[in-house]
Image (cartoon, rainbow, N blue to C red; front, side, top):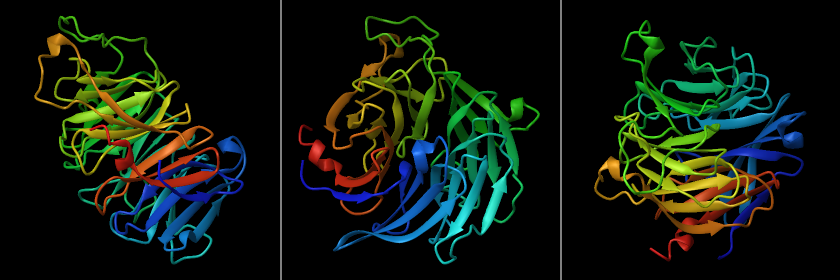
Length: 350
């Protein structure tokens, strides 16, 4: 593989990386000392220049940082998910301290995502079994959605601001619709059993049933807002149509040797996604999204297009650049490294 851009987060183990939605030359990294077990956190704002990757700003926190999201309304602001249950909003123009602090979660806040449509709110999920919706202008949450289990990842639908998704330790993907009354299951409209067998009869294709396992990550397809991909402890990536919660997965992608820690659909192609794993690899996938097949035949098998294995520890974060030719990604791992590289180099087999 050709040369990569690299940056070392000396003394801190990264947990998440995000490209700025405003600039192709700015990324942010959320990291923790001592692998997030004990100690401080640090968020880096990094700039890409002809001299390589440069530090624009750092902020230190008293507790570990597990995730972050760029603001969709202010190019200089980002929100971080902290190990003490808080969320902190930082501004690159303000030194040292957050401009807002949001603290309602009772345990570690593990995921945060900004609303990409209305841009006026963000959501967080926590090990305390809740998802909370926030406004950046008030330090009390707007809504709390109960999950009941350790909730590793939450996200907004990329085209409908009322739809929220979450995956958790109980092997389920949940969909909430804020347009429904809260009295109706707290806005819960669909529950997808990720590892269960399809409700109907199945054909000779690959089996979709598996033992229940924790689901660690998920993402909405940017071109088909009814399709969500999930990944977790059982090493398999699955895609689901949320309109048919009990129909089983549309496709399976197998290849990782340990748990899938994070995945992301490409913003440039409807059938490409990337995943990061505890097996120290990043893998690029084609989910075989052809015309819908009869679900009775079982799920399709997606195609692995390539493997990036330059990390030497757990790979914990991955994100796509929204700009340019399409294909640049950033990955981070517990090896204290941030790598920027062109995923098109893995697509030569297509």
